Length: 297
Image 1: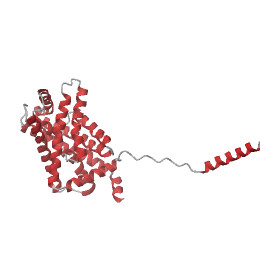
Image 2 (image 1 turned 45 degrees about the vertical axis):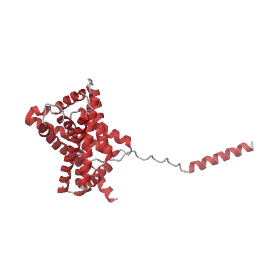
Image 3 (image 1 turned 30 degrees about the vertical axis):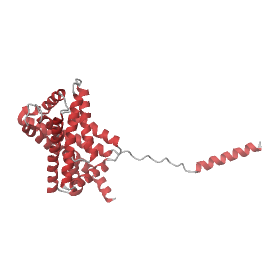
Image 4 (image 1 turned 90 degrees about the vertical axis):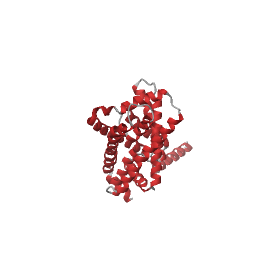
């Protein structure tokens, strides 16, 4: 009997001591993504780093990005051959083109439409007003993308790797992209609006890709907005460089100058507006205070 009382007393004592001992909280796992203000800060730093590169590096990285655009364009056409269900067609075409964008984002290649987000963020957040080096880099990137896209298109054509169904599918896609031409001035401005939407989505692809901290998250973040802009037929100048490069080297009803005047030029204008205003400017000023505190630290 005495032993039972002693055991009970010991148990009570242990319980009281346990109540006094603070419970150690489990460590929170590391976040698997960057918060928006950190992403915007990364944009600014990437824009600064791109601008600081030697001209030869800028041109080589722009050339590489343009090359990836033609690979993505070819893959998107190949995946869409003979697909009659529109939803499946858009999904597969978007996945195909996302391969090109994934190579661009992860390799650090310089794409005109990504620069439309990175450089304005750098200027809005860090450097103030635009200067001539920024314009020079913008133009060099655009030219490098076109040359890279044409280079891969020449290689693909010379290789003789692709069959007639590919070119039939490509002609249908080019007709869809050039449908605005029949509306004259109205169609030209419609391409600008479509270009705004396209670069808004690509800006968000860059946003999501930058947010992710592992390769799987980066690929997924790239893919979803790309599928959206491909499905919407939003006019994205860098993507169209890939499609049009394949088109001008094959049998299509459109001349090279029609691709440029009635699509690439208005699409590029829209892309600059969409990336600079709807992504760079909005997020920079929405997180202005957070960015200031990060820089102070």
